[in-house]
Image (cartoon, rainbow over all chains, first blue to last red; front, side, top):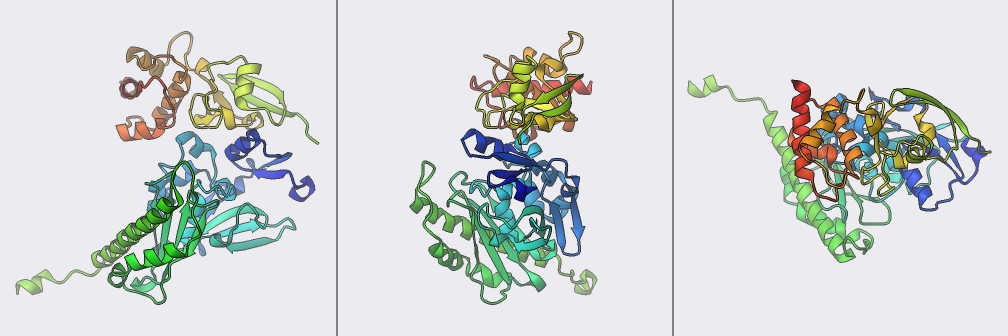
Length: 274
Length: 158
């Protein structure tokens, strides 16, 4: 249907973004409404991770018990995304595919190392990493987002400097060590951007704590020139990206270290008294 | 080929069968076709909350929703909230707490509060602020609005 409709056709999920784009003069000639496709509205636990259908609304996401249990930081953050009306209607798939630097879900997917499932025009399914997505050019219809297993993923989401900067951070911690991570940045560039943290070998949380300032500095230097607009200058944005990254990295690493301590078996008190 | 779309929608407990252009916006459908002018257009970008209506009990922005999306749904506007001339408890609470001045934001505000109280019977102040943080009142009556929400919740519980 998408192929027959031509260049001016778009898929429409929640539609808020599309209606606004049409009001601002974007030449959208046909809308392919996905509202009736209930198969894309579910959140399921699968072997490959947590599968979130692309038509899941923000409100569904924030109130879903499975999301609250597995991705509590995102569930908590999503209570403050946009407003209740937009959260009830807007979908996470539409949020990603709008490729708007001020929208949040692409950042969450990128930082978490999530995969995106697409259905191509020839009917073939294709799975890509969220960090590989570039703008609105996608290999078909986005059908779902797959978050990796939550027992090895730790996420932070900082919206405190919106609308100048939004920052999401994801750390991979298999077997108690931080093996890698990603930062995703919104509001500061023409599109959401992401970068891998320069962690060369798995580190214990206490080892990483000492390196957070250097990691934040090294990564920020490599970023492209941020935007200068009415919200902030490029210089301010670059400086604050480093600050937010350092703070969130330090807080997340300390949280991981604390979780490891709190799950250690307690020593025998009886033995100590004896 | 763009053709008009047949929809069936229940608005304020009355069922309509309508033929709508695909680019018809709900706010225009309500205000111009059904003469339900309680749905106000403020920002026209889903931000200010003046156009809020309830679709299947959830708050929606009528200014950024296509009319064809309403097919098979039940819509409540401010005109449908009172029953047989008796104000809804939220309307009464707004009146008793002087929770409005010019009144332009009030229909959207009241419908948002109705949805809030349907989901949270006894909301704390943080929850109230979270649900109403994008219903903008230019007359700055926010404190009275929050007091009205507490009063409406209390009235509903009694």
